[in-house]
Image (cartoon, rainbow, N blue to C red; front, top):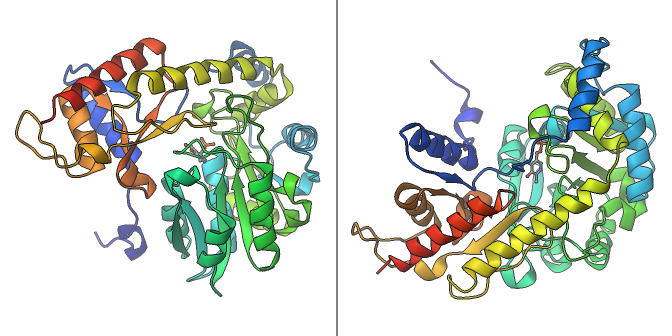
Length: 399
Ligand code: PLP
């Protein structure tokens, strides 16, 4: 069959491929610890499931408005106002099938052939591929570990060309866990003010997962004047352990939102009606448990850093948010496994961990930063302890 040229240039998600291989090995009876996929091991809280169930029984099983139900959009506007100090009218809000669909909608709605999109690396695997599908050109800017994996104002300005139309910011970041401070966002805003044709996607999906008292700030909170050209993306997947419900939301300028609604109206129509009821329950319900969960994640982050410590030469970077460690494995390059294979890249190392020690993690190459691997610590302490034991064993078995 003749397939689209565009799609042949799209790289399948590496995290999904690795998860598939881990599942295959599991099906073959191997004992695999899955730290590759980025989702909490908790189930969705009971009160959310109950409310969604009751709403479904009462008839919330039909199509809704494309942009989302009035009740949910009203709750989202309230959330942006009270938690982020951002004011959006209801026509500036859209609900979609996960934050992923909203970013996709936005890029499809706003990019023209060859428009450049600046993406700081390490980045979430889907950004560059989505940009390519939308006919744009990803411009990757490498952010170094000693700068906290964050985009500096200087590097942002260097990457800007006459074709730059968008910048994607993600804080807390996947895979780095880096959280931009007020001051860092201010400095980036100063650069953006000089370029009125550049828009921003601000992906706040990990907003609720921050450690050691770190304060989260969204770009428009810091620079309200940029609201006219910023899309603030968020969702319930990560914070409320609701990855399977597929509900994300975004706020932004009304002309962008209505174009996104147009795209969505011709693809999935509305996000699942029952999922929207669940998201409404999550956003309007008790939020206290989120802090407790963050604390649990923080302990798990520390469990991993304490266990792996200096295994890879230098102390591993301790993320300020999200639930990933992004660890350099460069110091094992050039060593040989017991089977006589050389480890020459992060991909080799991750394959070695999976095939010979049963630990699934994701190579940094997938996130645009080779020489690292991403380990998701939103897993049980038993699993994390065992994974750390196996990783230590794997490294110590290299010659
Ligand atoms: N943005 C980032 C940075 C993510 O890591 C993810 C999921 O892994 C998403 C967006 C998508 O989230 P959702 O489940 O709401 O589509």
